[in-house]
Image (cartoon, rainbow, N blue to C red; front, side, top):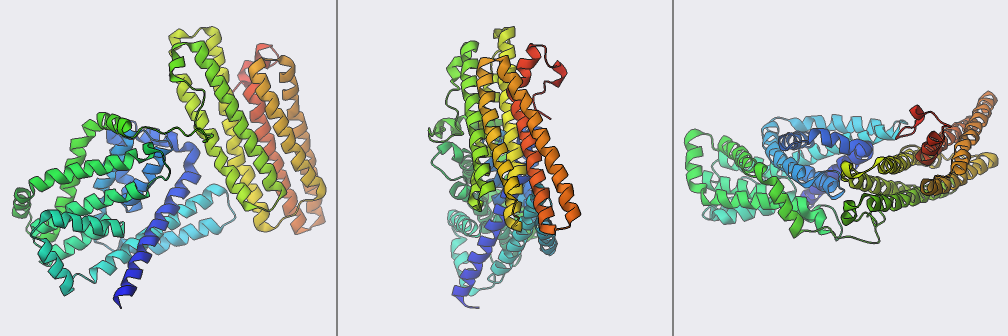
Length: 553
């Protein structure tokens, strides 16, 4: 096989590895995005837990590079604080040492099984979460396959005279070895493949132990470069805090190890006779030492990164809070007013989602579905920012009326965020199913869908007005809207049964989808009513307090 063709193979396997990592990341975010913060909060409550979580995730993903890219995206989105995210990366670095042990066996043999499971789950006509989990399985299989192929490709060169000559010349300079291995790891996107290759070269005597250990240091350094270059895109320096912090920890560890590399090399070789095993042990000890050194220092280190890479506020980004002034927290009544104004922006974002859903259901442009789903991130981030802002207020400074208003704001934003989740996870997937199957609604069904969405928009405006005025008349009218959606669902159920008796498959499928959409809109309306009407009616004595829930059911 010629040299140019080998370069194509290398580029293709790297691209496959990146695409597999992308599938895993997007699959995890889509399947578990709404619950991700809670799940990570339970797993990452302390540094040791975060460290173990990073170790476990990397063991599953088979790539610390993939873990770095994933956790960088989560940290940039505000789902994980910087200190536990850095602890995750320290665990991921140790996790790669376990992978080196595992890949000495034929782990890639399970790649076809993972891909098969993933494709079957993705192609089955099941819920969106099952399809997203299918993406995860497929991505994992592709990553394993790519890593295996990269290792095979590089192993074929270990007896090449030119490579032996190059490594022999480089062995005299540990720094040159570090740079060489860092460049290889950056190009291959896999420190595992490079370390396994180094083990093979050391065990066959191609490189001496001292040079092999320097190459291992370079592989560790190179794996930290990729998340910096390929992490979250954009001009916000804060998005680079995690990958830059991980790189700086690696640089510090490599610098210290280089200073003491010769005595370390003598000690390791004295205890481990097999040079290949010595490389693996050195790889593990180095990462454990870096983790032990930095775990106690993550909080001040994170603070330094925060000052060096401050968050850039983009006024054009609708997910960036505008009214949550930190200085206003000293005056609770002002802070509550600011949070209420920000809550109205959540209402505006939900209105944009409903308008986008209307266009998606009335047309055939799949891009409208994708664009509308992205707006759910705006709802999530604004809701998260408002909750964090309100929970930071000193409860001792709040009187009874302030506490009531705080609860109303939280209830309003949480219910609207839940309404957005219904659109994102149910209504829009149903719209996508309509396009995929080529289903056509009757004129009456189409008109009813558009009418009910317009009704939702009107109810949302009423809820926003009620949120600011506490007018009981608006609350009663808004609560009565639930009757209209129940009646629409009842009519659609009757019509669906009649079509089933007719036996026309396409008509039955379209009628079933129409019924699902009406149920989604009924759920959305329930959240809108619960967001503003229920608190007012409860104070008026027209609704039992037991029915006032933070999240509508």
